[in-house]
Image (cartoon, rainbow, N blue to C red):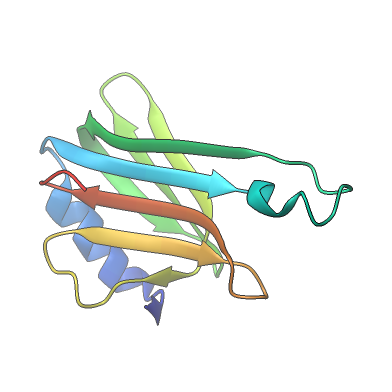
Length: 114
């Protein structure tokens, strides 16, 4: 994965709008590691292969970045994104890693299920 280059991500967001897309959205505060440190608050969420369609979207910030996607009836929003998969041309695969390199957040969009 490469560090996010916002103009490239915006181009990909624009290229995927107004289509039925599969979304994978995931966030964890390290819930899987709470057994090592009881002071950590375990929290996580996960959506995979839900179908969405957005009319507009954008990437904002100076890093870590946030992405908002405006759907017909609401919004999808994620924050803390730091990297993207540069070899993917048909799918948008983004992730946010903490200072130790651990995955904190992921946002993926594709015309095909994950």
